[in-house]
Length: 154
Image 1 (cartoon, rainbow, N blue to C red):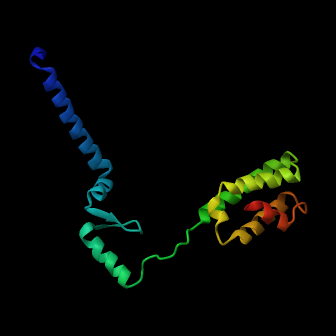
Image 2 (cartoon, one colour):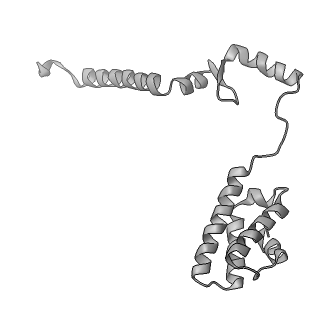
Image 3 (tube, helix red, strand yellow):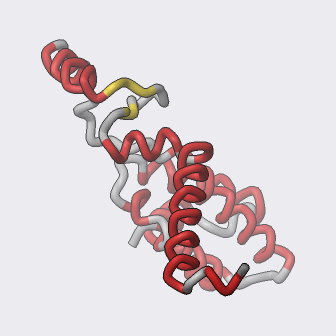
C-alpha cells in the first residue's frame, strides 16, 4: 500500500495539512491580531476594537471634537518607580558594604544613565529631592541635595 504513494504526493499532503494546522492555530489563538493585520478590526486606545469601516468615521469625529491626545508627555510613573526601587536597593547594598561617598555618587550617576527618559523630563528637581530623601534614609547627613542633583542627571 505504501508503494503507491509517491514522494510528491507525500509532500503535497504534508504541506496541505501544515497549512490547515496553521490556519487552525491562527484562528483559535491569534484571531484578533490576524483580523487587525488584514484590516477588518482596528484597536481603540481603551482596549476595545472597532471595525475598519467605523474606524475612519470615529477618527474624524475625534479630530473635529478635539478629543485626540495631542500631548507629547509620556507617562513616566512606571519608569520612576523602577528607578527609585533600583536606587533604594543599591543604597541598601552600599550601606551593608560601607561604600565610600564618591562610590555611591558614581553609582547613582550610572543608574540614572540607564533612564534617559528621566534625564529629559520636567521632574528632575522632584526626582533629585526624592533620591536625596532615600539617600538620607540610608546615609543620614552624608550627602547634600546639591551633590545628589549634580551627580544624578549628567
